[in-house]
Image (cartoon, rainbow, N blue to C red; front, side, top):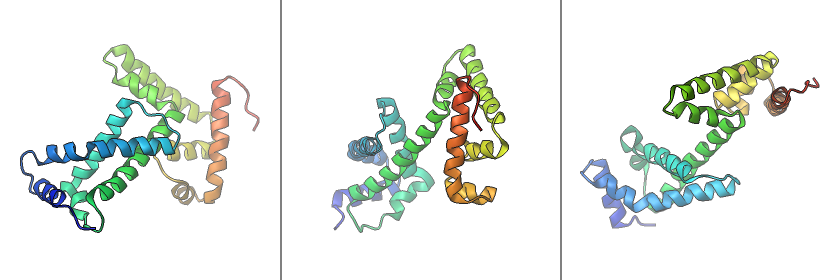
Length: 194
């Protein structure tokens, strides 16, 4: 599909860093990016607030401008620019949605929001929450704690975790499930059943 003249011009202006070029780019494609975020969230049954959409859109825009507009420099015109940007936006949105979901599983979202607050008590609460997470991990057997750390805090996938710990990739999921069960039971004050 031939590249529309307006898009070719817009890319060239951005790459030359002409004044106003980035604003024109954002004006032209922000609606598309919002749509992609909402579609990605819906496809994964995730509810996103308007603040979440803004944050994810900002991450997508950063991805586009990062490394001197490398995303635009890699565009070869094999598709339309909106199609190309949809792929870039969807990949970034999915990564962000996964990242946010993982944080929610361990309660990092509330800890982060407490830390972002403007009062000293908010900061103390966030530090206490981080300490609490660390204490919870210390209560797990060493291998389970390490798997949880690598998956939820270092954002490694099952293959990476298996390789790093020398365990079969297909055993990472059950270890995570067992660790989550232990953490839930500990949080609820119930004894763990092994």
